[in-house]
Image (cartoon, rainbow over all chains, first blue to last red; front, side, top):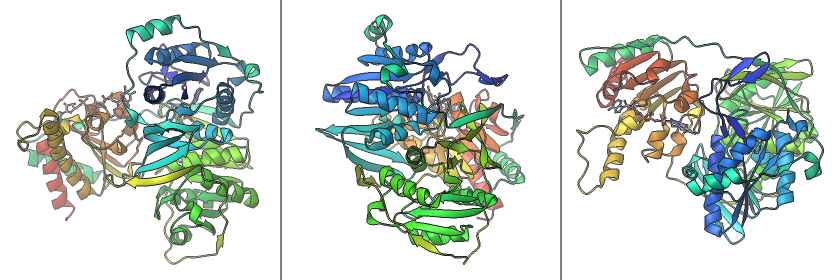
Length: 255
Length: 337
Ligand SMILES: Cc1cc2nc3c(=O)[nH]c(=O)nc-3n(C[C@H](O)[C@H](O)[C@H](O)COP(=O)(O)OP(=O)(O)OC[C@H]3O[C@@H](n4cnc5c(N)ncnc54)[C@H](O)[C@@H]3O)c2cc1C
Ligand SMILES: Nc1ncnc2c1ncn2[C@@H]1O[C@H](COP(=O)(O)O)[C@@H](O)[C@H]1O
């Protein structure tokens, strides 16, 4: 079973992200693998073990994104490929999907595993766009994956409960947290990853031209700071505290 | 200006933010609602009552269950015939896939999870949160039609005009399914955090009541879950009195106290209710990014130094097993329930 995990690199969740002269800055906060994509790597590794397969992690991004790929290698991925091209600097989701789709076709895979969404852009549409472009079935928001010969069954986590979907391979799957905690890189994994030479593909290596950008950013805005001052409610007994708190909440007119 | 509005529903239960999308469409001109699947005619009726000028319905047996491929092919074909300026969706798990695929078919792209949308001549300017709402961006789509999914509760809900109706046009289903639905697991009930105006949440603290004696024969882990269930029962009672939904921290989900669909936060749901009551939740950044845009936040926690109090409007330092039931009683009395 050949498995591809699609991962992105993003600023850490703890980063203080700011708009700085029309540019986004996150100070000296580290860049990390998109947390949702750690689950994608975990899901891919589970399937690698279940099917005696291989995992290739791929990422579109700048040279620094090799660190995110190294994290995937350290977790247990077999190989990693960075797709990097200055023409992709302002790529939107459809652009990313076009590039990923052609990389997937070039590499060849039975299962392509995505995260649910990116932490920076947060669109959550790239997996379905990639599925549409490749013509493979889309199995979204899987909390569980089971492969049986040439078919796959996933348990999809929806607002209304779980839906069981079955499709033939190859298939595109996006995963959620219920897939299982991402494993920690092993000592051996870290050593292997630190020595790995990660190939870099450009658009011409993929034989495609730069996808045109459909969604353009006009402006960046910092949300107004919320000045919340907490009011602590105290009292002699739980009943008294509850009484006071209920009055405060009712006075807020949110019920 | 013509807008298509996709009405998202699960077996006839409409995601209320679909109506918010209809309201936005009306602001720009005519609103054409699109309803696929089972019970489509009943849903179409409500669409008229919520402002739709016209409704297109496809209720072919191939659309009985939502599947992204067939739904996308049907919607893309309809959009190609009707030529709308704009296609709107409420933001849900299903519409992110559906809009994504239609954007590929129509050679445009979709702007997701908008909190604002304005017309600008022939085009539109959209506002959306990025970097977990640490920033907002204004974007526009140069492709045609413009496609957008709207964040629940970010736009006003139109008033319902009971009895209003109009013409329903039937459309054919298109496309081929690429997967089959093998079933649904009934163990979980619907959790609609995105649309809830009140959310009462529990964290790891809900299991921390040493005075509760679990039934004999449980091992340590089972006893912890049993205790947590007693805690979540109190949280649920409070949610019921307030007509709200039950949320949870990831620690509570990971420990097996409650299913993942209840999780609020970075890897769960991002919510913005009018009232959020956090019980036994410490207030880690990954939880805060999921709920800090609630209008009024209340925190109940044993630890006076818990970071959740920094995000809260009202705080109580105390044991949730004492405060939560007392609060439920107080509301019962004051709200006349
Ligand atoms: C990549 C990543 C993604 C994450 N995504 C999420 C996410 O989506 N959502 C999320 O919530 N977390 C998320 N987390 C986890 C987050 O960092 C915290 O670990 C988690 O939110 C803690 O949950 P908690 O507050 O319930 O538990 P704890 O931090 O253990 O806090 C329990 C609190 O309960 C209080 N308490 C205990 N007993 C009582 C009592 N009897 N009465 C009152 N108070 C009591 C304690 O004082 C304490 O403050 C994520 C973490 C990572 C690394
Ligand atoms: N630059 C990228 N490189 C590789 N995979 C990506 C990239 N951008 C998005 N993805 C994948 O698509 C998923 C959804 O991204 P998005 O639609 O941007 O929220 C992510 O969780 C990744 O699995």
